[in-house]
Image 1 (cartoon, rainbow, N blue to C red):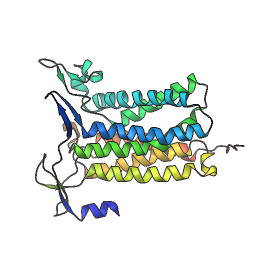
Image 2 (image 1 turned 90 degrees about the vertical axis):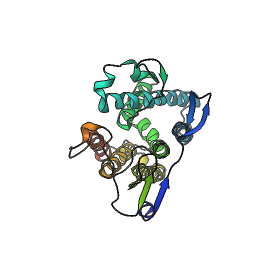
Image 3 (image 1 turned 30 degrees about the vertical axis):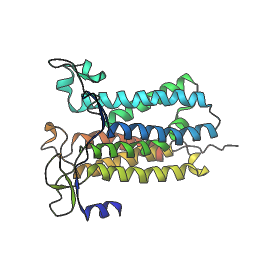
Image 4 (image 1 turned 135 degrees about the vertical axis):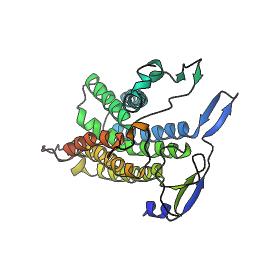
Length: 279
C-alpha cells in the first residue's frame, strides 16, 4: 500500500546529497550519515539479542567491528569486480582506498558499493568470528539477520538522497522527478527497496521472538536472505541499468547475482533439522 501511495503522487526531488562541506574538499553526505545510522541501529537491535542470550558485550563488539569491515570492503570489492572489473583491475588501489589516482590524487570516498558483495563480506566476517570464539555458526547468523534489513533500509534512503539507483519512467503523471537526472517522472526504486526492507525487518524481528521459529536454526537467516534478494530481484524490473553492459540483458547483473542468494535463503528456511530446545 505504501508503494501504491507513493506512485499516486508526482514529487520533484532535488535534495543536495551533501549535508556539510568543509574547506571545499571534504564533504559529509547524507548517504554516509544514513549508512552509519543504519549500522548503529542495527548494532543496538542485534547486540541486545546477543547479550540477552548470554554473549558478552565485548564479544558482540568484536563481531560488530568485523561485520562493519566485511560490509564496507565486501560491498566495495563487489561493485568493482561485478560491475566495473575492466577499470578496477587496471586500478587495483582504487578498490580499497577512497581515492582516485587518475592524473593526480582526488578523495572520492567509496563511490560504488554492491549489496551482494556486502552480504558475502558479512558472512565471511561472521564465519571468522564464529570459529575464533568457538560459537555455533547458524545461531549467530540468525541473530545478525534480525538487524540486516534495518541497515538495508537506511542505505537505500541514502541512495535516494544521492538520486541514484533510480527507476524507469512511469509513463504517466505519477512518480518522482529526480531533478539532478532529468525532468521525467520515474519509479523510486530506492524507496521500493527501503519499504520492502523495513517491512522485512519488522517480520524477522517479531518472528525471532517466537521460540518455535528461533529454535529452528537457520530459518530466520534464510527468511532474511531470501526476502531481501527476492525483493531486490523483483524491484530491479522497475530500475534503469546501472552499467552499460546490462543494456539488452533479459535479467540485469543485480538479478543474476540475487538468484544464488535466494536459493541459499530458501535452503536454510526449509532444510530438515531437529528443533533445538532451550532451557
